[in-house]
Image 1 (tube, rainbow, N blue to C red):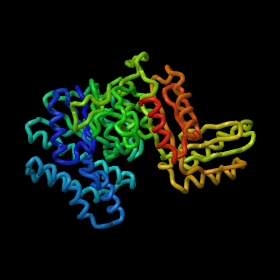
Image 2 (cartoon, one colour):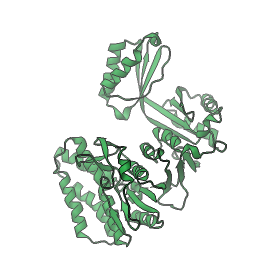
Image 3 (cartoon, rainbow, N blue to C red):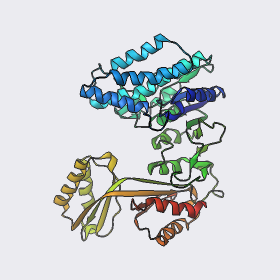
Image 4 (cartoon, one colour):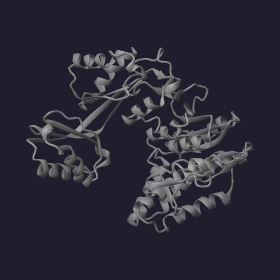
Length: 454
């Protein structure tokens, strides 16, 4: 049995729905389907999830809601029209639920946003099941909690309860019926809709693949494979045929957006393989993501992929004899915790420490508060805020086999007069993390690609 997830671009309109239905029905093993909300139909279009965000914002501000409701409903009814389905009962059900969304009392704004944004997938799963049945393919819409998905955590960053996997293993699916489960959204213990982090349909698919003990988790998107590097930087880069779970995790951290990094976690323990494929070219083999145990060290390359991300910032602290002061790092960690700032890396030297953090997760006020308290608490000789800090991840299972790979990377950058502000070799020895000036990161990426792939 296969669990199949389709991204938003795969379900943007009726023509894309038709491709998805052809893919589902071409393989009898594709019994569980996880749809995202409809994505962009063309450049400049708006994703349905973003329309729901606007709906939520207008609800909070007390603005008129009639136009945004009509816009959202039309995205779904246009798809029905493509298949020439006239179903007033189904349309009225969607309309009534839209009308109810802004009338419910939510415990907090986070719950409100979760309920609104989660309905993009919630409606689309119902729509897909409706169209499949219309075309003669028996299908059933199933809520996440009905199939055994139990979550806790915060409303907009829900976490799976591990015990639910045991429950899901007891679920019996009808082999003659396609089960359609909405991605991204779930329900908490109080029956309120919550969501995984943005892009969480990948997570839903992975949870179902593990819980239902699937043979394969297919993830359909709009590319025919995962590329070794961002194709916007390097024309026609090499495609990755096979990569490991941990390679994918490392690369996702630094900007690989094809696959949600958290979606790897549910399948790692049970070793369910993942096949990333293209809805618009389903015959292409795509990229297989597999356990490390199935990789032959004799055939691996030193580098599998290169990823970069400029979403970081850093606080540089210089203080003489910093390494001699017991508890210095603890003081810094307490300050970060007090102001709700999570750090990504903290390289240090005899008199220096750099705190690297994801600036997309913190406000300007939080950053300034942290800097001020560090000044007051540890009295550094120098403290600088580096507002733009880019990270490059060079990843490959073969890096611990080809021991000259890190030297080759650093030499190439040195020859190009590109300064490396931070170097961190992971304990697994499959990744090299480099801190590089944001203005040089694209050039550095091209240089490393040429070293290993041209």
